[in-house]
Amino acid sequence: MLSAVHDVVQAGARKKECCRMIGISAKTLENWKNHGTTDRRKGASKKVPRKLSEQERQQILEACNSERFKDMTPNQIVPILAQEGFYYASESTLYRILKEENKLHHRENTKPQRNVSNPPELVATAPNQVWSWDITWLPTAVRGIFLFAYVIIDIYDKSIVGWEIHEREDAALARDLFHRLSTRMNLKGVHLHSDNGSPMKGLSLLALLYMLGVRYSFSRPRVSNDNPFIESFFKTLKYTTGYPGRFRNIDHARNWMADFIDWYNYHHLHSALGYITPNEKRTGKDSELFKRRNATMEAARNSHAERWGKRSVRKWTPSNVVVLNPGKNYEGQSSTEGKKSSQNISKSA
Image (cartoon, rainbow, N blue to C red):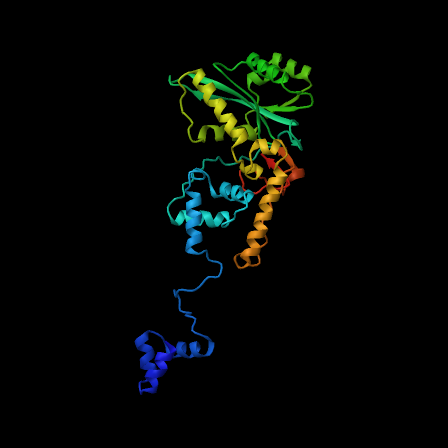
């Protein structure tokens, strides 16, 4: 363009009139001649060094919409690919691209926190130190008739260590559940936390727990969020794709629950664990998986340093301490429950 304007001016045309015809000012023309021809006008198309190419954008869309990842969020997709040695872009970039293509659907249903006095504080640094349990109602095809799922979770690795479904809430049934569990594993030294329901405080159950060497504690009266890990699991259970809503009978409920628990323990990428499965955390595989992810991230930054700029590469680190109902000693530490990063201290309240 500069060459064309120069030729026309040399032929006798006025520079100002030439600039008016092509939509720029004479000052802009001089700036182009002195500093290059970058278009600095507002709204002008500019080259962004960090911008993904169209091919890379299509690769991201194909990966996110593939059969393997179609039901997963970017927070789950990126860690899986990093473990396998692939990195396309950050989670936020994947979210942005999916939103632009109208392929992002998110469902969230949380309740506000309540300001109450401190509940019992329990700390877990390994599996089988602190368990939490509760009973949730499962609707049946007959309105007003429910089944009851008894579920026990290890707060350290989020594994479901025991469960049963019955037609009523009963301390004797709870006692039988823990008795059967004690025949498969040593419960001595486990701290068991529950709410104040009558099945949890039945004398026959408490006597068995005492005999097995299990310590126990209860939530505060009329406080529903002192047992957050098991409540979080129940939300996952009832919001998962494929949840029947109503069960035909107890056999239907037990069969569905068995499949769900298997999926949850061995395939569910848990956000509070840094998007690994409860079983991977329980068996100590998290360090190796995070090491692989971190190596992938470093390699990605080295190959496209311009996209990171001055930002540091994110590091996945194992969550080595989990606190049930943390007190003042843990104020200021970030909770990983429900968040994408895994910190050194995980707490829930």
